[in-house]
Image (cartoon, rainbow, N blue to C red):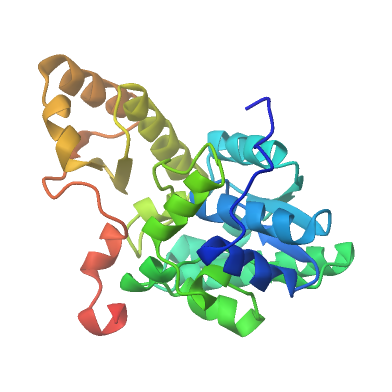
Length: 281
């Protein structure tokens, strides 16, 4: 990650439209997680506005330390000004209750803080990386974005994940094919308290399993039970006796009494499957 991403970039097509859209905003604060979506958004913002861009990563136990470190490295590689912004989300009572609209409350607090930071920095607009495919799942946080006036350029241009990955590849981003990440609280069932201890053990278990050669991992925390989601193509590797024993032992060391493998495999938002159909629409 030492060298910067080359300055050569597409000037037409969807990426050119993205750069043009952001250029009209004048100056922006980019909500930056370091994932492929926010990385492409930051690259386009830099191409459109140069130094009138600030990347901000919200720091809390909801994001693992490795993800925060990665975000800083990507921002540096893009030559962008970057800062961490602590968000005391776990101080809020709704995290103890963990209701189905937890994401709405969390996004409201997070993006309100980003708006205040943008105002302090003299930046006109806050942008974030929601894209069209995100609409296929229950996303109460999107309501908070609308209420606060946060711009979502990928949504405005109706761009989907595959398009974003191709644009990121063409732009030379190092994480164009990096696996998706998500808020660690999404691993905990609604109605079960979100705590620092649970978030820590989820992050540790996922890192351990990834180090065993698995590319996409979710450890869903059901109290005494760890429900592990892997890509279907990688499940056979998990059933190797030595690998299976290692996963079991290491997860039990983190406090899980039982360790299970979800036969449906990895999918986004699997905790939402327990919600009533009318709520997920």
